[in-house]
Each structure stands twice: as C-alpha cells, then as structure tokens.
Figure: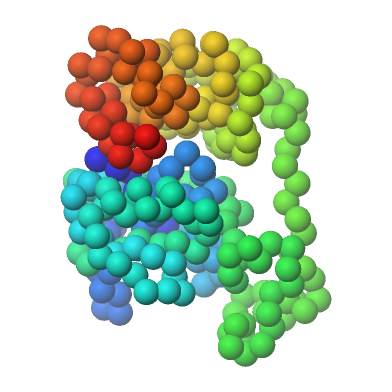
Length: 284
C-alpha cells in the first residue's frame, strides 16, 4: 500500500494518534500527498500551510490501498476522482508536480496511521509554485491584511536557500550522535544523485532508531555505488516493516526490474513483497 503524508499543526498530534485525522466542521475532505523519493515534492505544501499561522507543522504518515478512490489534480485546476494507485502513477509522470494535491472524502483512521514526525520547517514553496526568489505579491487579493509577516513583505524578500556542502554534511554525520541532526543531514543528501561511496553512512546502521533507518534507506537511493546494494539489503532485514518497505523501494529505484534478483530470498518477506507490488506501480 502506498505511503501518504498529511501536514498539520503539531498541537493536533496527540488527538490524531488517538482518533485519526477527522473531518472538521468546515472541512469535508482530508488533503495529502504521496511519499515519493523527492522529499521536497512530497512535502511541498509545508511552507504555504505554515503561512496560516502554525508555529510548527508535522507530517502524519499513513497508508491506504491502491484501489481507494481519491481526488487529484493541480490546486488551480479541475480535479479527477480515480484510484489512488492511478493517481500516484499520473503524479509521478508529471513534468511539473509543484502545486499538485490529493484529497479523500473520509477520515483517516488511527489504525491507518504509521507515524507522526517533525519536519524541517523550510520545505516547499510559498504563495505559489515556482515563487522562489520572486517577490511575493502584496495586493489585497494575494496577501491577507494582518497575516503573519505581511508588514515586511515589501521590505524584504526571501533569501535564497544555500545547500549545505557535501563535505560538511559528511563531517556532521561523522561527529554527531543526535538523531535530529542526523535526520537533517540525511534529508539534505537527497538533493541530488551521486556515484560517491556511501561508506560514511555505514555506522548509522548500528543506531537503534527506526525513523533514522527509514530515512537512511531513502537517502541511499541517491548513491549509485556498489556498496549501496549491500547496505540496502541489510536494511531489508530490519525488524521494522516500514524500514523494509523503504529499503525495497530504494532498491527498485536503483535496479529497476533487477531488484527482485538482487533481493533473492528476501522477496518472500511479506513487507518486501507488498513493497515490490506497490513499487511496480509507482516506479517501473
């Protein structure tokens, strides 16, 4: 089953863990995005949603069957109702996925939620897709009076984000034992594909934190190197089904149709076999 993410205010976390993501008095649908290999694309709505006043937003991750009917489309265009698996295939084929959204007309049960995690608070676009480095419009139609930061809109533009150099990320990973620091570094490594040796990440395999292992599995998909296969196969033996799922998806990303041969007898693992079926829809 595909993994999806709904972004919400951190203060809703406890209620969501207990009751799921419920429909509200003024909200008849639940918005979400599919979790794909590009972290930015999956969480592209975070900064725009944060403009509404929430101090900290979190990602609520859940899974739904591929045949579940959902609505999908660009926020400014007509949406289509179609099975989730087809919606993800269409989304993955887009040349420009920014501004895309999906929603479902029912609550998400607590049993369908796999985790809630904190996210870097500067992911995504604001005001409109591709608005980066463009001055936000200050007209009343685009900028609500009294909205956060509105007074300074005309005084200061967003400073362009500067990627952390690769060697600095490697040094931080080698020196730090803090999970949050390591997670931030791993997500930053997902900004481009490399042929570099991922051995500097190998010591992370010994850290007993399922979320870290899951993000590590996702990060390794960006390293096309002979040692990547061995590290991902190790993660496919992790006790967490989520880690196995992401590790399998990363192997599919790297080896495509050869992923089954690479996995060997591991394909009999239930989590891996399901991930292979879902990955064949999304990535092949």
